Length: 307
Image (cartoon, rainbow, N blue to C red; front, side, top):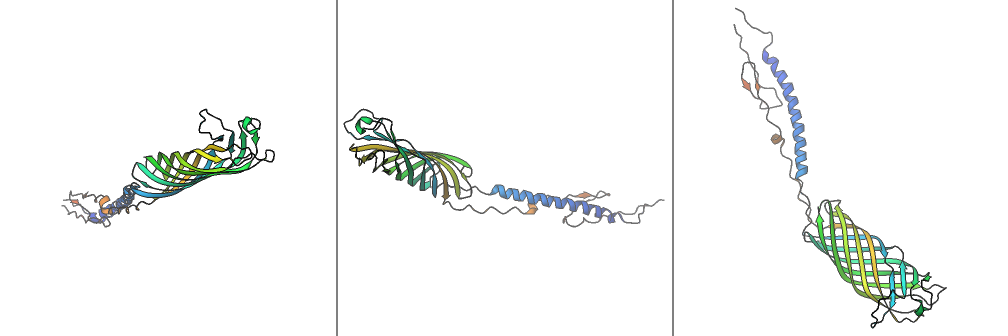
């Protein structure tokens, strides 16, 4: 009768092989579980909702003032006029402070603005009343500026935490002042005055969130102050003058949202929930054994000697 004997028990070999392979698998599963947990935490971080919160901001940029016509004010005059003069401005600047409330798709805000542009020249358009040839360009120095207080209504569209756009309009009060130094070649010919009138504006822009509470944006503004009245202080003797202010501005905006900070992200799930249970191994005799502790080798398997 033949016996199958071994100098070394089977369990001295099999557990070592099982321990090495199983431990390597456990380390890989731990790394995979950790990566899944971190990714889940990042995706679960809530986006900041800015709806129903206050905000404040500052804006500033370049401005172009349309040629400003200046005409003799005559309430009985019904025909259109190109104006006795046209004031030509250089590139100016436009700055403002805003504060408002975000209702969701609609925002309501108050705005305090200041606009300033230097005067390049005074163009004569109607020579019979001034005695100066039509089309003459008088090189004058001076500036025009405007202080304004506006109430704006804005309609938002897009993603609050990405790129979004808005359009709107505003109405308020603006004071416009024009100051001018006469040209020595045309003494006594200049336009100066100030007036305050109802103003309105059209607004459009885009913005993006650069932090949970700060937005960076680009804004266009058309600003209009009609029906300005100036008293003629020149030597021409034109009496009361009428004019208007129209400007186009491109502004950078920086807005701080006073929304409550977002809640902290949820903790990552325990590793035990993302690591699969250890595999069970079938021994050569057919007995299924499991490893309750992946860090240790499975239980020993004993083979009986057979005759």
